[in-house]
Image 1 (cartoon, helix red, strand yellow):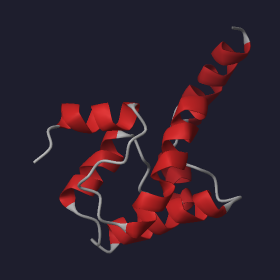
Image 2 (spheres, rainbow, N blue to C red; image 1 turned 180 degrees about the horizontal axis):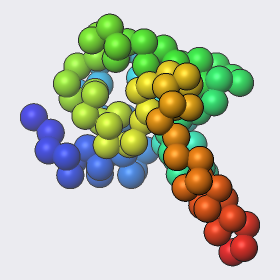
Image 3 (cartoon, one colour; image 1 turned 45 degrees about the horizontal axis):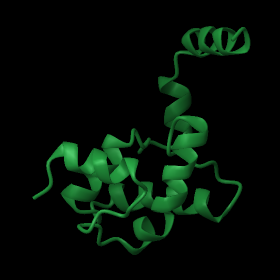
Image 4 (cartoon, rainbow, N blue to C red; image 1 turned 90 degrees about the vertical axis):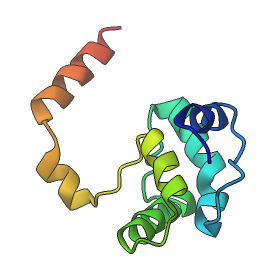
Length: 106
């Protein structure tokens, strides 16, 4: 069993954790790590194959086809499991605007 600290360690060094069984997660994990380093989150937009794989991960999670360890890994990466429609319902646009304004003044 992996503790959350070992999952964070595996996330930080780009290596795929040994407990990962999902073929889709195995394929997209390196791109998710890279995207997190560049953009601060692992949620790759749909514009390419890696984004489509993230969408597939969301479906697999909804269908309960990912292991508990895989779910914990994705949660630890702050992966968003909800659909785009749900993101709009949940988003605090005032907070988003404030963060944008702060980032543009840096």
